[in-house]
Image (cartoon, rainbow, N blue to C red):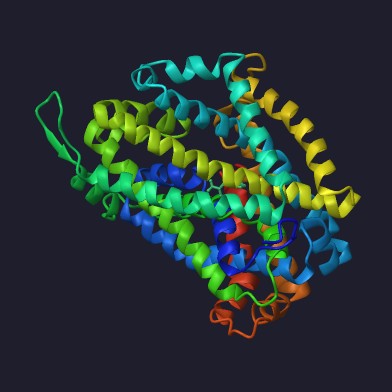
Length: 463
Ligand code: PHE
């Protein structure tokens, strides 16, 4: 294997690396939570329909633009149209921001894996454990720095020798772990204090059945918007990452097939993660345990693992290890796209660029990790929630910038460069681009309209 090569070895390597970026905490934690909140099977149906239309459109655009220009966001958009360089710059800023807090979440997950490994599972299930951990001024910083360091080391080793090698090992293991835990979840049964028996299979039925009672147009629109913003985050589109990864794909790779496989992998893991988490939470805490945000992963789940008895220690460890793999491969993609843009701008060499960025990000992520202690603040966000540093970064990058970038990039591709710019690239390997007509309609009309709605809603302008 050419270790230093600046491209992926082939189709499988590319698919696993792209899936590594796509599969992250969004799949393991946000997707199950949204499914439980948004009507179970109803959310699933809406989500699947969106993956095949709108997710597909954004993913195809990013990857094809990357491969056609062989550049990352800034260079790629500039090459498409020099007047649109600004779009490249804004796109580049998304991973720049995400990197500061994704490492913090990675650090928390690493800490929990270690807790399960060292037999402290019971402690993690106690009330207040998570809060006292993140509000400590030392421990979260140490784990964040560790996670940042490992991410940097992988990127330092290059596209094939670092990133592809790690994804090839971690993604299959992750898949197996998630499937095994989901299988175990279905065998669970528990009688609560009121004498009511709940089983994992009932939890699965709750997850898969579309709940239509009380469905109003307003609620349906909310579900649609939730599914849409989840899809963005989950597929890692509209932040330049898939442009960078696309630029490393060899011309002979069949992009149609690769895109289909990435969609399948990402959605499959999300679906199975739901089958792993929802039945387990349902059995031990009913439907109330499916709370939002970090509390599901770091508070509800440890309680669920603890209720499983001895098996819970193993299941908990397996869960947090799969979460480390998912987060690490995503974090690597974030750093790689920053590095790739810098390399094109400064021609500074990979090793040196990674070294400089590592120093900057060790400092920046430490600041965010201290956002619950030293640098605690409360800011009311335009969408109505109150956030700390991490939430602010997340809000700016995901809720404001990403829909805005998607909107502009669909205008650039659909109306200025024209859809054929992408379609030609999809067919360059000699394979037919099957969903061509769908792509044309989506990129010109449907996606820009949807992105505008999402942008207005998530910035609070609409409400
Ligand atoms: N796609 C990842 C997930 O589903 C999240 C992610 C966001 C990865 C941004 C990279 C960049 O969790």
